[in-house]
Length: 107
Image (cartoon, rainbow, N blue to C red; front, side):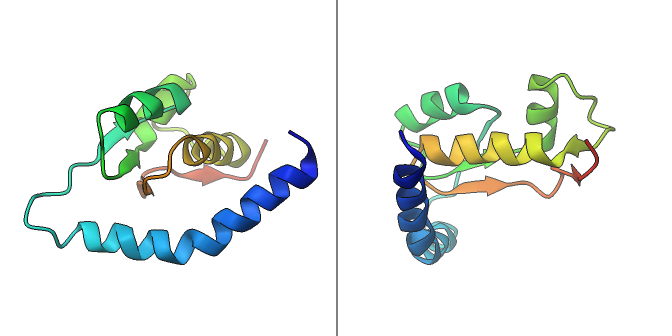
């Protein structure tokens, strides 16, 4: 896929972001509990998506463990951004990133 196609896809996704955020918010007010399955890479995300999850969560511990980083360390921002970005492109359900996913802008 060329750069222009990727930019067009991202522009469309960005336009839809407010609607996705509102949808995610409404999932918290249903009669049945919102179950967030934790994922750590695009592969685990696809598996969770296939079982019909309404939303997906990304937690620091699973991302750190998958990438060989101790949970006490900060993930390099580019790595964390890349992981979350890949997960977001894999599914069309809301993706919640836990506050424990700390970023460090140092390489």
